[in-house]
Length: 397
Ligand SMILES: Cc1ncc(COP(=O)(O)O)c(C=O)c1O
Image (cartoon, rainbow, N blue to C red; front, side):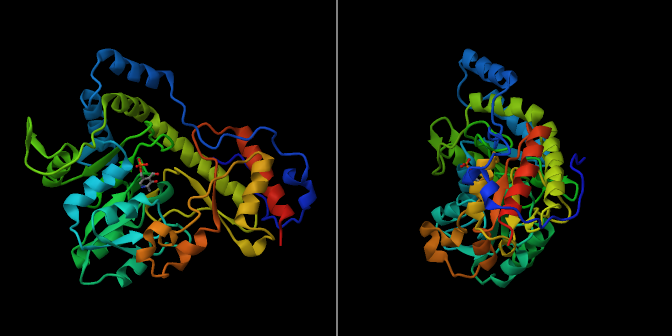
C-alpha cells in the first residue's frame, strides 16, 4: 500500500543553488541506509551453536538449508556451495562443452559470463529489454547458430526473465538453460518458484544478497543425474573415501554459513513481502516525477526487488546520471549503479564484443538503484521523495 499521495507528474523547475552539493540545506543530514545486512540475534545464536558443536564442515546445517531452500524455490534438488560464482561453474560444467556457443546477457554481473569463458565456451552477447532490463529473447533468437548449445539468463535485480520465451527458444534449438538467480531468491514465475524452470538455477548468498550469509551459494535442478554430477564436481569427484572418479573442486559450503542461511531463511518470506511493498511506494513516488522511470516487471513474474533500479530519461534533465546521483547523495539519499558498463564493454570480455547490444550500452549511463531493503521507514520514504523531487527540479531541462 502506498503512503505517498498521487499527484500530477511534476516537471517543476528549481535552482541548482538550493541543492546540498551547492551549499543548500540537505533534505536529510544523515544519509539513509542503502542496505540492511545486519545479523539478528537468532542468526548469531545459530552460528554460535555450530561453533560450539565443533562441526565446522558441511554437515546438517548445509543439508537443512538445501532441503528448505529447494522446497521454497520449487526445485527438486539444491546443492549448497562456496559462492555464486562456483555455483555457475558447477552448473555450466556438466551442461556445456568446450567450444560451445552460449547465449549470455549483455546486462548482468560479470560472473554469469566470465564462468562461460572459464568453461572454454564462446559467449554470444544478447541485448536487454529497455523496460525490464532483462535478456531480450527476440535478440537471442537472432543470434542462434549451428554451434549454439545453451542460454545463461540472469533473473536480474530480483525480476525473473521471460521464462516461457527462453524455454520455447531452448526447446526449438535443443539448448540447455541455466538461470542465474544470484539476485532473485524466492522470485516466482506464473505462480511457480523459479527453481521449477530450466536445467539449473544458481544463487549467491553474498552478504548483500536477499539471502546473505557472508559468502555462499547454491545450485538447484530437477534432474537426478545432473544433481549427482554437480555434487561430484563440488567435492573432487569423490565417489568413496579417497576414490576420485572425476576431476572436481572443493566448492563446499560450511555449517556456520549453513546455519546463518537457515536462520535468515526463516525471515526471508516476510522480508521479501516488505521489499515488494517498498517497491510499490517507490513506484508511487516516481509517478510524480517526469523523466524518472520505474522498473517494469516481466509479465507473469513476481519480482523480489533485490535492487530497485530507476531509469533516467536524460533528455528531461540538464545533467548526467552521475551528477544526479551525486546531488542525491548530498541530500541524504545514497544510490548505486548496477552497472557502469555493459558486459561487452568490459575489457576482460572485449574479445566477444560485437557492438550489437545498444540497449545494454545505453543503460550503463541511464540507471541507478535507490536504497532497497526490509528496514526502510516512512521517514526514509519522505527523504527519498523530497530529495528526488528537489534534484529533478534543479536539473530540469
Ligand atoms: C547476477 C550475479 N551472478 C553471479 C554473482 C556471483 O556471486 P558471488 O559473489 O557469490 O560469487 C553475483 C554476485 O554479485 C551476481 O549479482
